View 1: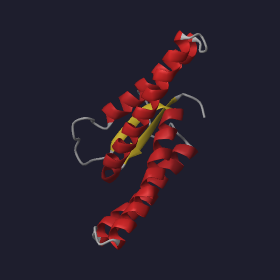
View 2 (view 1 turned 90 degrees about the vertical axis):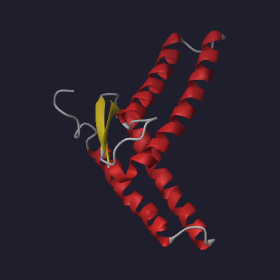
View 3 (view 1 turned 45 degrees about the vertical axis):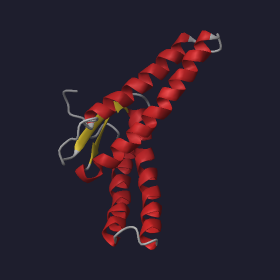
Length: 148
């Protein structure tokens, strides 16, 4: 997969979870940018590597803006537009986070700390995000508008 522009449509019910995933990725990429900057300063990384790390962080910042962060967005679907490789990373991580969420929700339910409806919402997130992931794998540019 290359870094051509790609688009993903995140269903409205899952924007909050994808936003949390994006924030986690933002932290990880910010940390990586810091390490790359230090490596550049000590001569073990080239300027191109530093610029690439900056570009990756910028792409995640743009995706956060697409979801309306830090302000809450409406309840509708959100289109993320960015480098195909980054968007694949986002949806893959969101799918894994959703699967982990099922485990956590079932555990809280079993401990009497959560209602069954919360478990159901966690379970429903997995196939919904898998559908976005599968669409990304099939054709990352399919959701892009022609004029982008």
